[in-house]
Image (tube, rainbow, N blue to C red; front, side, top):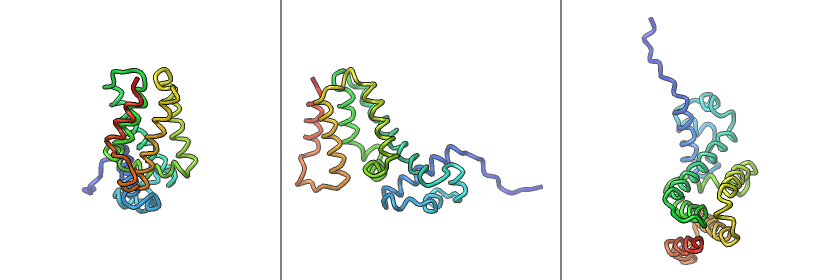
Length: 184
């Protein structure tokens, strides 16, 4: 009789761990540090185990990006649930989520560098944004709201570049001002 230990299979937990480890590596050491071997080691699985969930590194990175966009989307949903004003509701939620990005999805900044260079990542983001803008067309189609969202994107880019504080407006004041511009 075999008395060996048999680990219970938990594919969703392993998949989640692989995504989290890849995101953590990207945050700590940059996207170039996300290698199949490094992620497998960090997750405590074999390379074969990783390949069982993701056929290649690109699919793993895609999963990390999608996961981060989903977290961003969840933050927007949470804000929308408490926003009592229709005009600009998505834009205000977008500003709030962008300003608090480091709190809810620390890997988003590192992994979304790919948005600047990777066509697949840009497609993920564009598809998400297109769907959101279509859903909120009645409340957020005004050109001035698009300008506010572009300003929030600029804040994200400044954060990504670690722009010194003396070259920037106070974050809380800027956030309040942008939210004010997105309010009737």
